[in-house]
Image (cartoon, rainbow over all chains, first blue to last red):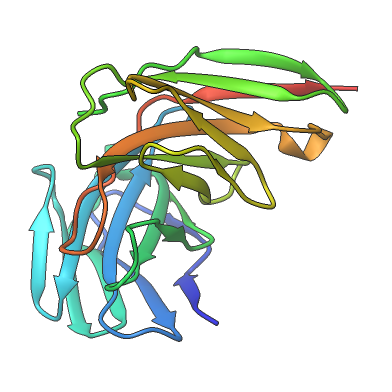
Length: 113
Length: 112
C-alpha cells in the first residue's frame, strides 16, 4: 500500500533562519506531489505542485521554494524565514493513473519567532 | 479559485444522518465533485468523488443533482469522530498535476 511521510513534525525557527521540510511517498511511482500551507484558523493554500522530477509549478509568489530531486521525494525550502511563514505545512500526492484524489501526510507545524 | 459554496457550519446529533450541501453552479462537463474532511490538526482525508451518478462507499454517500449544479454529502450515522471541516471541491479528474483548490469548507459539529 502507499504511504506518505513528512518530517519534521514540528519546528520552531527564528526569523531569518533557513527551512527544509521533506516529504517522501512509498508504494507508488511517478506520483503528482503537492505542498499546501494552512495558517492558524485558515483554509489550505496550494503552494507548489510537481508532475515529475525537476518539474515544479509555483502557485503564489513568496520566499519559499520547492524541489523534487527524486521521483518520490518533495522538499520545501526557504533561505530566510519570515514571521508570516508560520503555519501547518502539508504534503500530498495523487496517483499518476488515478482519478485525482489526494492523499495527505501528517503535516509539519512551523512556528517562526 | 474555489468554485463551490458551502455553509460555514452545521450541527448534527450523534447517530443521525449528516447532510452537507454544496453548490457548484458553474461546474463544467468534465469536472468531478470531490469531498474531503479535515479533523483538527491532521491532514485532509479523501472521502468520495463523483461525476454525475450517485456514489457510495464505506464512509459516505454522494448525491449529485441531475443538472450537476449542487451535491450533498451524506454521513448516514454521524459519530462524535465525524466532527471536522468538510471540503467540497470541483476539478478535472485524471493526471497531469491538476490543481486541487480548497475553499473554506463546512465545519460540522456532531453533538452527543
